Length: 224
Image (spheres, one colour):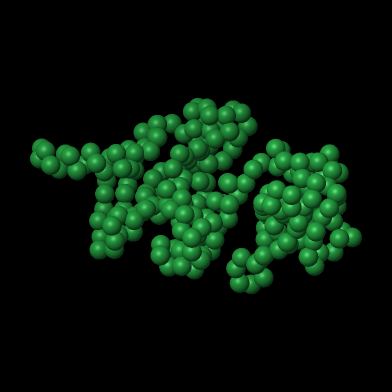
């Protein structure tokens, strides 16, 4: 075996090492590289951590990863839908990607880094990703950075709405006025959306809210 080739193969195996998978093959075309991963271990339950989940269905999935120089990089792998004894039924736990995401976590982190410093449109053009995909990554990044409502005790909140894409798609934003930070984001701007915030906050903490500033909301239907 050519020692140089062996060295290069080792580099790629290390670059694309994920728990439960190993590098199986690489396919290079003019504009992209396809990394094919082979399954090496049993599926893991994301709820209890068990690796004895019953496999209900297996299918091939292809997602975007960080670019390799000027070429787009895609990863192909097998994913399982499982039924676990703990009661969980759904997609197995995967270390490198979120359920149903079109991008790896590494690419999502890189895109989120860009959206913090440039517009959604600019980040979309830079990574050649759909505008909606970039916006979803940006929203998940914001939500991941927010503190759990269970640790908060807000007494003054501000409620506002922002449009996040064309076609009257809105987000409901709740801020802690005293702490001057966003504490909750909900999709849509309906009364039921804000009801979800108070449901997550809990009845006892909701009763402690003394001030609620809202712009263009029908306060008669907001449930405190």
